Amino acid sequence: MAGQTLRIQRVAGALGAEISGVDLSRPLDAAAIATIRQAFVEHQVIFFRDQALTPEQQIAFGRQFGPLNIHPYVKGMAGHPEVMEVIKEPADKVNFGGGWHSDMSFLEKPAIASVLYAVELPDWGGDTLFASQAAAYDALSPGLKQTLDGLNAIHSASREYSPAGHSAQKRSSMNVSEAEGVVGEYIHPVVLTHPETGRKALYVNPAFTMRFEGWKARESKALLDFLFEHCRYEAFTCRFAWRPGSVAMWDNRSVWHFALNDYPGQRRHMRRVTIDPAPVTVASPALSHA
Image (spheres, rainbow, N blue to C red):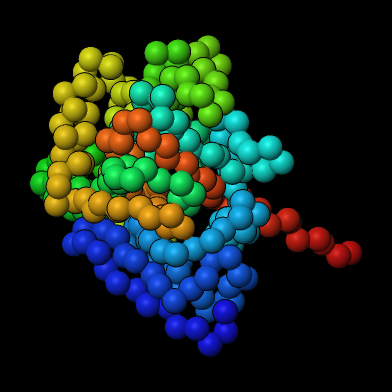
């Protein structure tokens, strides 16, 4: 990658930028990685066109930003458990990811990023929407910000991956397990401060946020419903029209996304790797010398 110049073009006001001048199938030097990381944290979702990635190359790209996640409810590719094949066959009625959400917020340590690669696309439709939760937080009143800054929320896969949940619906080409009876609940702050930018973002989503910590579900509903409506306001969003070989990488700490299901009778095949936070290194106690 030495000698190549990456070009970054912003695509919307709230979030999103397209990066050109880079081949993700090849090893990237430190400067290229640093440029991509900076664009990622600044623009929250970044896009690449005209890539040709094998599963191994997509894994290698993702690992340059952190360890890769193995989804607890969706079986990965044979030989590559880190790679989730997101497929909707022509006969399938529901798609995977067809609702606003943040990937993996139902885990104790949620994923920080997702990298999605387009393998096969319908003739029309199948775009993905993204919404900046940093912009959503910025637009709140000072009083509501103060209230939310002190709250935590309970996240769980129990609703989305239960037998009746959207994500657990049977699809002919995806092996999705039901989560009923085996899923936990985890507490996350309602307002997340980004560790690299210091910018605050709302961290609740309709798929996995159940209630506020210390509140009943009924008490939580009105405020959560308000936030869910607010967070998808059009001015906070961008829309990506996929082409074969396109790649999107988004920051799950500050971004919702929504895969549109508007291509009945057509096939859509994507591959996803999901990046976990780097493990925290605990320094060993210094050895004393007699």
